[in-house]
Image (cartoon, rainbow, N blue to C red; front, side, top):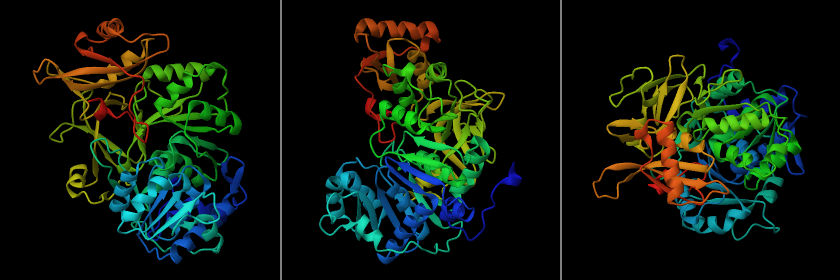
Length: 521
């Protein structure tokens, strides 16, 4: 396999690898982006991206200046993303639905000189922009008036003034290209700083060699493009082979995702367990046509075995569950077509190495739980402005995650939760994921999250508590709680049952769809 991988040269700009090379290969006329009634070829995408790059240079953006993108999944997001790279600047990306105080934090933290902001986010972004010390220009995408408000610039007007030709910045493979933000599960998100080299390195090994992305693929993503998981699977990966990506700016709902699959017939769906569950819960789920899909990806949170079984039984579409991180850019352990181990996250992607270690950094025996360490050339340089956290996570070639895993004798990895999510019952580690998977197999449970909370008896001891969203037709209450506890006792080792059960209408989730366990605690 390694002989066919693209060799990244010392002088390298990843916009050339992901975009310009397609035109040089004669693929300029192929569809690159479909969004509603708009379609852009690779040549058109290159021209629009060049206009953005020229605009950034005119506005005084220099090499390695950060530029913030706050735009929904529209072609303009892609044009801005490539334009930033072409100009030698650094992309940073955030959700369009954040409150003003979050934008204030990200503008201060990134020190972005320019921000691309969609009109729908302006009401919340403008107060933060007025306080920003480093911001010089806001470029408004999708404004409904001829001019952007106030001193802001109109994306449409400004890019129309620019040339469709541009010579990419002569960056090196080790120059900074972009920041990917951590999930922020234990505090404010930090930017994992990545070089131009990192993204193609993973693309070659995971997207091309492992998943087999190809020119005739059409991709669609549930997560939005500001999330590195989707930036990879729905921009970088399809663009690297001349495939087509389907974008939509509105919220990802199960109805909308199925509608887009049936309309555009994608071959690869970037998914998350929450959406898999929601699609299966649609009243007409069994009648929906997802047959165009070659496979669906799953990441971001653990995929319960029960959901996998139900999805396969309903649609016959393979789900390739895997794990990646902002620190490593993308997925480094995954299941593969023809090699799916139920309940596992698969095996290590070729080119990466992984270890499971104890608190002292020693490898744990086979089958035991420990923290995951990963080695691979897509690793970030570190976290911006977080020296101590960088030292804790990055040591030499190895990146230590907060994820707990175990590995079986055949090299398959099994997720056991986050390091701060594990519970100890009677001195024995218990995985919340194991309890959750058990409860999800009960017909009364639609969604569930298990966390450790302080016992109400005042002992200070931690007990396991299950937060359950009941399925339709089941009534929350003490009787159901007792039934679920008895079910876990019968199905798993008795000591693993949740000592407390609470019922919610919905689980709290963050921007990326992950359950906010800290709120449940």
